[in-house]
Image (tube, rainbow, N blue to C red; front, side):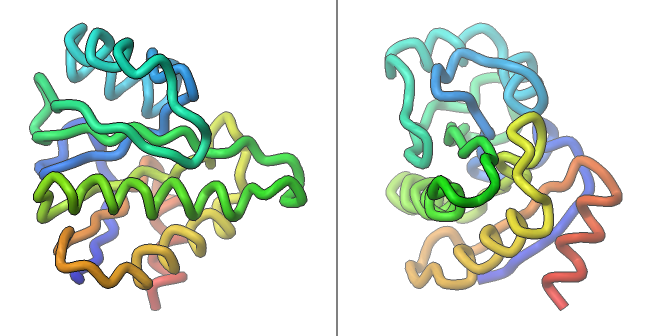
Length: 164
């Protein structure tokens, strides 16, 4: 599996699937979630309504609509409560379940944001370690390429340092 780390706007990436760091309602929000909903258009909201939400750690897939990506995989990450409330296991499940949906839908490439590290306050280095470890442990043929899309240069540095 090829792993890339880029600093970019995930809504502009050309990948078979991009991952939305969603809230459990799947109805849009701030940060990357709001950006993906705005870029994909109102059809995304309508597609997400049909799910009636999604528990933390699970994932749901929709078309990408107006995005360059064919699919959006929505996964609600855990809110950080000090690391003693199963946050690591839930975050790992976000990545694993997203990879599973990508593989089931024939996605050769998938792009992840830094799930839970914004308003959910997950420590960035710990979250990046979980993300990289989970992707490296993935043994299925698909996806073939994983892109970690960092919003800031500081996030990019964290991932690049861990990938060394």
